Length: 157
Image 1 (tube, rainbow, N blue to C red):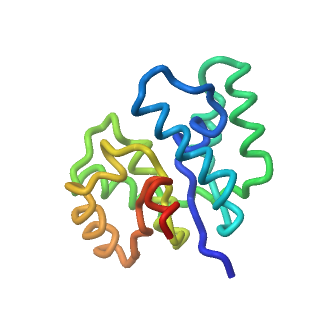
Image 2 (cartoon, rainbow, N blue to C red):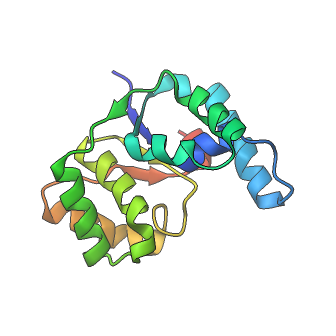
């Protein structure tokens, strides 16, 4: 059985987007493309309705490109347990109210026992300063947090 990976929205955005003029963003996009082309086959990939909703926002042509990337990726259910965990993460980590979707991504991946949560969101998800608090909140509700990482980190496995 392959390890499971929950794809946060920025991963899909980077796979479907044109190269950025910002050097750091362009490098992250390239790393994401490399992971997508050479490593994703070694994992079972999943998204949630949160990813689908975020991918439909913005420019209609870009949204179509993002949705095309998602076409064969199974969607995890957003359950009451997901909602409860997301609320706890917002309150106890604490995460700002503006990070409600970030908390929801963590909650979906955690409740569905994903092995990895793949993201470039280093403000609220792949943040080393928050990781211990995120894990503590998840454990307090009986869950193990997936390994939260960037494609660069998952390239090295």
